[in-house]
Length: 166
Image (cartoon, rainbow, N blue to C red; front, side, top):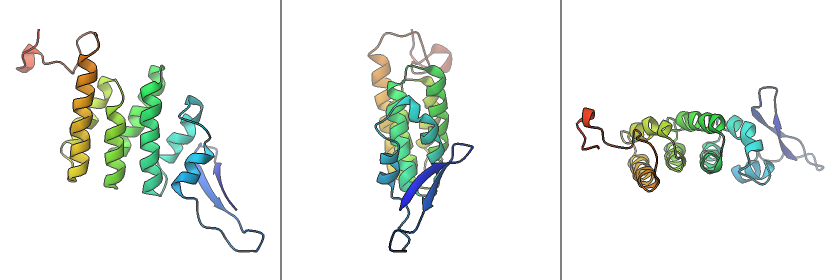
């Protein structure tokens, strides 16, 4: 039987124990890990989700990136959103292009200027799918930003930067 345990630092550890027949079951697959967290995205799952951002399996990191994006998009707490953006920023530099692409998609779903540096960096990624995800995320973010009345932000062109603002 397999399980997921958290150590003192809230980092998930896969456990593999022998079954009744004495054989060792395979390590958890990504869907088992996500199911182990229960119904989410919920803010209460944030520590576990953040712990899984360092999981050895890139499929797990990819799914966690998408889940973090969903959570941040619906999260009313600025401090928690900032933690999620930071984690997604780290995932946007992951060794796996699939994880980086998922991080770009997730960052694009978050309404915050804090995602901009990560998305802009994604435009320079060596992998075309990551570049495309970053570009689409920036477009989505700009459309979302322009459809809601808000104070000036980094999304707008400013005269001092050579843009056409005001």
